[in-house]
Length: 289
Image 1: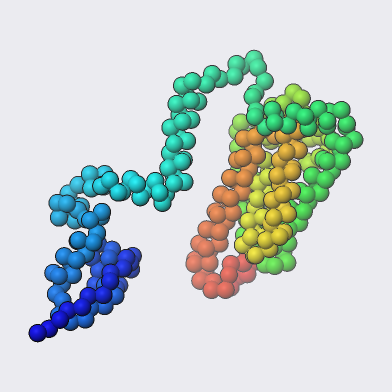
Image 2: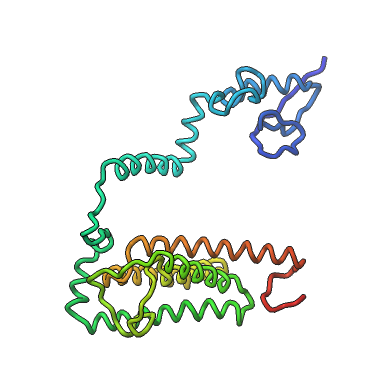
């Protein structure tokens, strides 16, 4: 008389296990258990994901195969996309149908301007303080530029430099395509970057995008403290730009997104060029090998 001992099942996403059905794998089977026995056990232990029609789900859409436990699983495990979906519904209903737009004769509404009213009054009443903060901000822009160029010219890593070139080129195209006027109560300074009270594009913030590119590179190289310092200075410069009415909130927010986007594009460019030229030890802008 032969006995069959079946060890506990475990979930696995690896299809290379000895046996697996419906994402459930057998660690081992001792005795004479047949394949049909294994499939029966899997079906009994995986009711939530089994197809009641037994057709493998090929004849129905994904929604038609859902059970009650599936939405619960989505909400419990993927709660961030669920919150974003609620945000889509909320802002679609509120902003698109209930919120009235600002009249053309009025100044643009910016929540960042509202939040920095006290800072604006302070800087308006203290021109010297405004000049000092502008000079410090210009120094920070110089720090960003120096680091980005250093990574290429000294360390031989061009990704941050390529990213900055992508970012400023796109900013110039978008800024020229839609030229927005400065806020009427803008507090300028001759030492602010670009130096000399020259005209500049509002959308999007090159200050914020450049700092984001540098910070991402620092994190990639495990320079976490330096990255944290740049992030803090980036927040402070954003508050100052809002306080002087030098940028709108949307300019700053898109600046962060632009830094992340163009850093990713620069990485894809490096990967593409490395594959094209069969470079095994990293991509270089100046190497012909």
